[in-house]
Image (cartoon, rainbow, N blue to C red; front, side, top):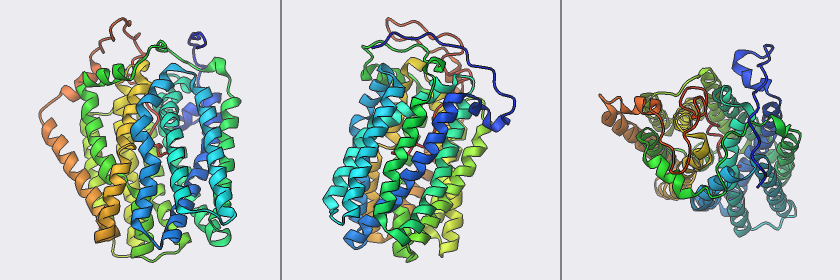
Length: 454
């Protein structure tokens, strides 16, 4: 492993950037964000194309769609903790470069099968699992890499802008995919996605490594169990993680519920399905920009109330009497989705020691996205027996119940809000982090929910 490079002070913020975009004053982050906008737009085009292809091949099979989703997320359940360990041990820029190249190659392979008309359902299953395996390393690495690009002072803003560009792509991608599928079919859309990974690779390689702030990197002996023990001693991290588990398992299954709602309830075509997904993403984008003003760690109650609002809105979206009402309610649900995910992510990462951050965010990813295979199978079964609306009802009501339990348990307690102010005991054999580097002073923050697999 290359020797640790000393931290360099970040350059003064460029006053020409508005306050909301202040982290874009950092050149490395600008390059990364530009590449991600292109790459994530391609990813969302791929998601729409893949879902439409599966439904077309299987005669609108809810089980097949749930299986594809489960296979794409299963590696996150199995390997993400090890992915976080890798992120804490090796150069994140190199890891992200390799991950995007492999993902692009996998996307190209599937696209060629579709274009030549030889694709079969089992091949889609195989590529979904392979891409999920790459994501088990890429996601925790990407989430923790943002702190190396911008430094602790700009990290909360960079985190919110990460969610903003993710959801900008999420607005553009599905709408464009719906139109292209109607005209060209699913194959060309997948080819566009394969090419889009190069945008992130180019951005990564154009960065100036000497301007990355790597902080206190763990030794080569960093272990997964050390990260788990660290989280186990922090009640202020355990409670939001538990709430994320409930909401992630039952509520965040929109990749499954939205195409079924569009096609089986409102009998929409590909373009209308894309617009319904865009409405959801538009609400998410507004929430992402709304959280760019956050400068400190959110309170435990903020996270719980956000989950409560999400549960109410998702339940209401399941009731939607027509397409227009569904679009409006899904827009509001999208807002609540990102607001909750941002609040939980900020609370968890702003309270984490940097030397454990890769592993903590791997655990966050494991809980939020690794639970998706189980949720997808459960929601797939519910929608298969009771219709597409049942998936939204189940997710909303479960999220609502989880939020109420956390609020009731936390009533009259201040431990959750004050725990983040106490010093974190260093792991045996390690020195305590220096002031301003432990993420608990309001000067550090996370990469956000974008956190959909790529």
